[in-house]
Image (cartoon, rainbow, N blue to C red; front, side):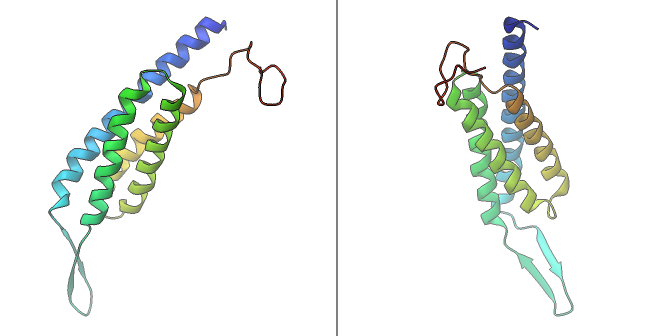
Length: 142
């Protein structure tokens, strides 16, 4: 495979990762806004019925959603730092959805799938050092 073909493939992977990350963030934001002011979780025990307040986690979801929605379009710029930002956004989204997985499994699995797919594409589309640059060990990079 030529260098130009490899660069084109990485560019397509980066664009798909941006679309997936933005889609996951939009879906998460829409679902999170609906749950911020509503606490639909009730636990029945022998001692009685307890209402759980999960609005703090929903605010965390909104924060992760904003981060994912912002990182997606920035990834299209092709800057090296945008890959790092998108990876952090995907990892934060994955971590938060793993916590809420027992409460909202379908929503969490959908966003987890999109974020994991975006993270995998980001890993394969990460920017490579150019061959004429010298690496930190003072040897030409490969």
